[in-house]
Every structure is written in structure tokens, then in C-alpha cells.
Length: 124
Image (cartoon, rainbow, N blue to C red; front, top):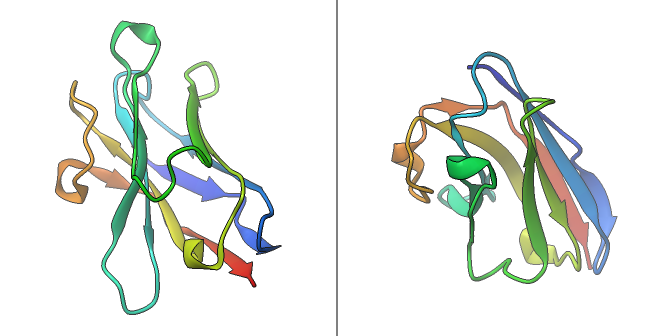
């Protein structure tokens, strides 16, 4: 599976961005996740969405709950991250990832494939 993330950019505090990640290969049976890494910090989990029963259960990091929404469109082999009420501390490189698992995972080591990352910068 190859992943291509896009949609990052520069936005002011309180603004919104929508990240997209398009996958090649089998997509519908992968758990999809978004992670981020700020300069000098470890990569951290942001959100993930499952695939069982077609609906996709979701999990969010506490820091983004209520502000970010993850969704997927299996017909387009795409996963999205709608980010609202952005804050300067959301500034990071955002990565999409795919995991061959039935459990909605949050640990980076559970994910088998990674995209190249897209920069999100939120100014105060």
C-alpha cells in the first residue's frame, strides 16, 4: 500500500484545514490513522478509523477530540482529517498510516505503511 497525504498549509489560530490521504492497493480492510510530529518531539497519535462492518469506528487523541474528525471513503481509497479550531500547538508534520488489523490501533508500531507527511502550521 502506498499512501499520499496532502492538504497541509498555513492557517491562523482558530482556522480550519482538511487533510487528505489517498491509498493505492487494498484499502477497505485497513485501519487508517493520522499521526503528527512536531520539531523535537516524538510522533504522536491523532486519530484512527476502523473498517469492520463498513462503518468505521473512530478513536481520537484527547488533545484533538471535538475539534478534529477522521473519515474515510472506501470508493475513493481515501481517508480525511477535518481539523477545526486549530491551535498553534497543532503545528506539526501530519502523516497518514495504514494498519493490517481489525482493531482500531493508536500505537505507531501497529501501522505497516506510512505516507510522506504534510506540514501544518498554525500561527498565533
